[in-house]
Length: 160
View: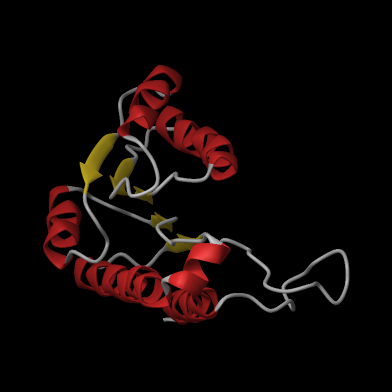
């Protein structure tokens, strides 16, 4: 299951993964609330992939939507891209970011557990706040508050 291809670079990177999975016999499923993307992504995906991916217009914070998707499909793994990541906006609307990024991730993990799905690839925004102490930037650099919590949840989930 894929979520939110809102960033152009992420879209270019993951469209090839999505199509590779499709060409390898997997059926990609997209869940996106389209808060910062467009359903127009489905047309180029359909042209590049063997088939049009299943797409649900919904949100990872909606437990019933997740329950329906997991019940209707034999999902083996989740690739999680639903985190909001605009640095400026995150400082202006921190509660919205925590709600989407942290609560949404916890809700997704709970739905995965209920469905018996234990494989997740978590895509962090890799946003670094402040002036980097060194270049190149590596994993030791400070990241946003929700990113750290989401990474802890995904690490915990992968360890379980």
